[in-house]
Amino acid sequence: MTDLFDRYRVIDVDTHLTEPPDTWTRSFPKSLHDSVPHIERIDGVDVWMCAGERLGAPGYYSMAGHDGVMPASTPKTFDDIAPAMYDAKARLAFLDQEGIDAQILYPNVGGFGNGYFLRLGDRELVANCVRAYNDFLTDWCSADPERLIAITAIPFWDRDLAMAEIERCLANGHKAVNFCNQPQDYGQPPLAHKHWDPVWSLVQEAGVPVNFHVGGGSMGTLFADTAEMGWMTNFAKISSLIFLDNMRSVADLIFGGVCHRFPDLKFVSVESGVGWIPGALETFDWQWKNGGISDEHPEYDLLPSEYFKRQIYGCFWFEEQVAIDAISKYPDNILFETDYPHPTCMHPGPRTAAQRPREYATRIFEGLGDDVTKKVLSGNAATLYGL
Image (cartoon, rainbow, N blue to C red; front, side, top):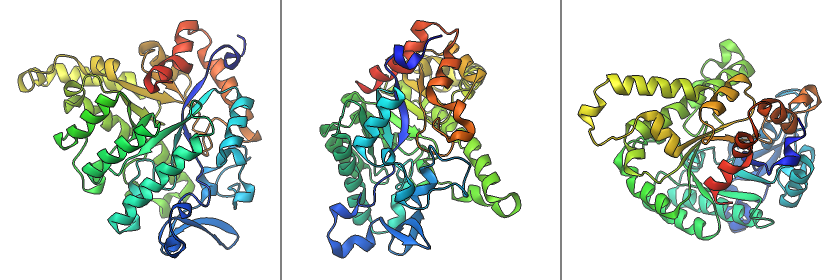
């Protein structure tokens, strides 16, 4: 098979932006720089700090191109991080090099569902930090907004504020919203609750999708076994099991009637794999048919698998046979991602160089046919995000 990336427009639906050091300080007066996320160099390592609290280090999520694994091979400072991870023009050059047409961009510092912002304390300051991130993202993507695709960070803990931020950012060219997959972890109603219906209504009318990135809930208690198991071993376990949080999100959307009430609204389960989708939907259908759903909710007119086909999408970047099985079953609902530049992304260092995106995609799509390949590599995403 010839190189797929030469034959098709490739849209990478899940990548991350390593926020540069001035992401927040550029929007606040110098007197507040210590109170918003900023970089400090501590023992030779660049660290995100806010009011004396560590928010993480950029090196841990900027691993593409580095041989080895965390923590030994983790970049220590921005001098060790490839510019394509934090500079828009360098990212565009990287896309040209890799044969990728466009990338959807997700955050790091604020958390994959934006909940980490709440650690900053004062709600007004938190709201301003969310706005500052979204404004930074708008500016960053302006280098080529048809290839660098902005996804709005949502302050979900304040519904009115969230709706106002959605409207503001969509007017600035953002193509989707990034919502917390487990809002109950932060004291908010779960996704199935009608509390969120005004948000879903607004987004449905806007015609953009709602994205649930894996790890969007609170992962704090998942690190409890670190002492017994070892930090990296436990991290690998957590990185595998958090896929289940997105399975729960999909179940909430379907069983909770969100898909039924908002039939034109699209949802995306991001960085959570696709191998589980056929099995989960077969289970949902079985329990639905045998669980009295039609008696309790006679208004539900579709099976879970049918709601999924109509409205929900999954993304994959490393799976082999299970990805092929999911694509074969749901070719209109599967999207391609690389997770660049995270530690397990499809742009690793020389140790696993065979897993570069174009080689991986060529192997996965062999035998699936041109129509299906085109849908998964680009067509589904282009329609979904209006590209």
